Structure formats: structure tokens, C-alpha cells
Image (cartoon, rainbow, N blue to C red; front, top):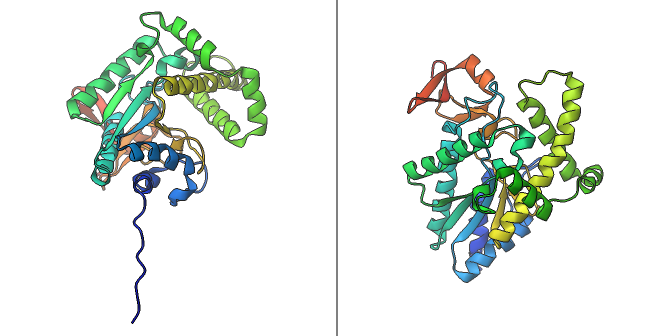
Length: 310
């Protein structure tokens, strides 16, 4: 007579993390093993041991790219709508295996570096207002928002940026040194530099001059992005930290992919949605989508493209 060994079910934090792993945004090979993500397991475990809802913080959803070859306008569209629905659905799935559930705090960071990415604060306000309206209209009950409007009262945005940078940002010299020795920082620096170059639509100098300018601005974007992360941590401590940037297994943050895209760096605010004939949504540049799809409007505004013949 043989006996069958009882196998203990995986811990709840492991099951919660397993729901995120298929969407890991990483610069290299993804790992489906939760044990390769000890920091996320630790962060989730703090909530599950206390029997509290798991709270995720996701810096992102800043504003649309200022380059009209990449996006449909300055307001959220189908890309944001689908991404918000995905994040809300992910929280709902967590509630199915962990009854206290989960909440997602979207920490819109556009105002933090508006001057560096050359987008007006007025456009960023309009983007953020429409993002909240999307959440409200769709009844996405697991999502909350946070942005620079919640910090330092009614001070002007330039003053708020200066205060946040002074309090939380690393020195630019420190970042430059780190980019020379740390591959993750170097990869982030190259990725942001590329975005800044691509997002510039009306530069009148040479290509090399533009690249020099964007390389300098990239360090500022990274510094303020880290400052924003530190501010979020001070206002919302003990959360599970997500990122829209690729993150390697084992990193302090978990990179999360919102929609399907050929580029691991692609986001809804740098692209347009192309709906394929099979219904799948892909993020690609507006100029590329226009060549293979027809434009669809939603509520009187450009929303996304549908593949020709689809």
C-alpha cells in the first residue's frame, strides 16, 4: 500500500503574485517562478498577514506624448481605457483568491517633469481630469488616483516641482556616475533619452544637437521620477511598488505590461491602439497605425484604429 504525500497549497502571497507574473515587463527573460521575486512577495505578505487589501502603487499615466506622429491627441483614449480596465480586472481577480481584495493607486507623474518633457501643465491637468472621468464612467471600483495636485496645496506647479526635487531627488552627478556603473540605470537612461528624442516634434537644430539636449534632459527626468517615487513612498508607505518601466526579476519594483506591444517600453501615452482583425489590441505609433487601419471615434474624439479588413 502506498501513501500519497500531502502537498501544502502555495501561500496566498505566492498566488497573488502569480496573477501578476504573466504581465511582467522586463528587459530580459521573464521568470514565472514567484520565488525569483522575493521583494514583491515580501511587500504582498505584509498585507496578507494583516488580512488587509493589497495596495499597489503605479507611477505612470503622465500625459500624452507631444509628438502627433505617435498619439491621437493630448487626452486619454482607447489605450488608457483598456489599461485602466485591465488594472481594475487584475484587482478583481486578486479578490477571487484573497477575499480582502486589492486596490491600485495610479500616481500620475506628468506635472513632476512637465517642463522637461515639454508638455504644458494645462494639458496634463486635462489628461488627468479625463482619466478620472474614465474611471468613474466605467465604474472601476478598485482604482484610485494621485498626482501633484494633492501635494503642497495651491502653490504654482513650478514651485511644487522645485520643492519635490529639492526634498527627494538624487543629485545629477550621482545619477551620471550610477549610469556608468549600473546597467539598470544605464538602460533606463537610454530608454528615456530615446523617448525624449522621439517625442520632440518641432526641434530646429541638428539631430546631434537634439540628442545632446535629450541626454541632458533624461537625467533630469530620472531624478524627478525617483523623487516622485520617494514622495509616493512617504505619502503611501508599505505598498506593492509597480513600474511601467522594464524591471528585472528580483528588483525592488515590479514592471507591469498594460497592453500588448512589440516594444517592452511602449505605453498608451506614447502610442495609439490598433485593434487587429482577431480583436487583439496592440500599441503602435499613430503614423504606423494610419497605414494599416482606419480611425475610430468614441464620444466625438479620436479613439483608436481598426485594422483594414477587420
